[in-house]
Length: 235
Image 1: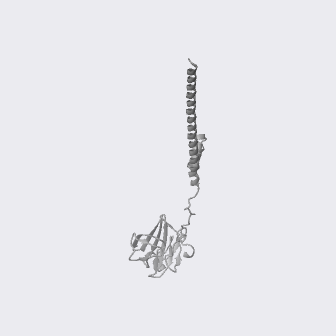
Image 2: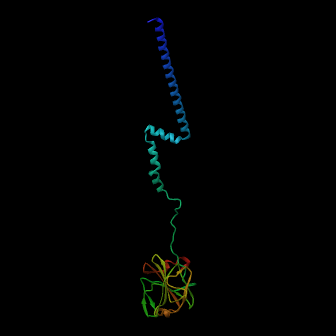
Image 3: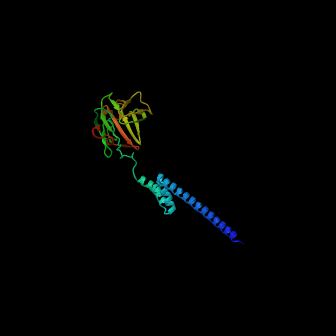
């Protein structure tokens, strides 16, 4: 083989190697550009969404910090909130019932007695008196002492007319020796201070005591002292 042929082959090999080197260099530069562009894009995303980038970093590190944050904003946060009173809650309000007087300028002539007895001049005997009697004159108005519903209006020969008002929760008031108002009927709603009727000496069991209102208070089917609901100046 001549020297010229050998020289030409050598030149071809050099050219091929040079071409391959150029191709590799271009590929490397292209890859570098792609990597730089991706890094730049990721940094831009981190700046726009720091929380997301932190979450990605946490997940990549595998330290579980993301789970801990979820726990702190989940069940644990709810339990702490349950320990705090809601903004609408207020201190308990005393809702004790206070009666109005069943009559104006009422004068007590016979008090409630439970463990002792009093003399009934009409019957000529000593007996318990589970009510308060208020002195009155005929046609004096009788007032409802508290809001409620008319449970009954009953009349008998011995006791005269008796009005019973149901105030709810087992509490009732009884007005005896009265003439019921014509507009009063069973089931009617009545308000505190509303006129129920007028005094009438129709209670024959106590007629010697003169015209008066026989006033009872019943709590859970037991007659109690009305003064428990007549407070301060109302007594």
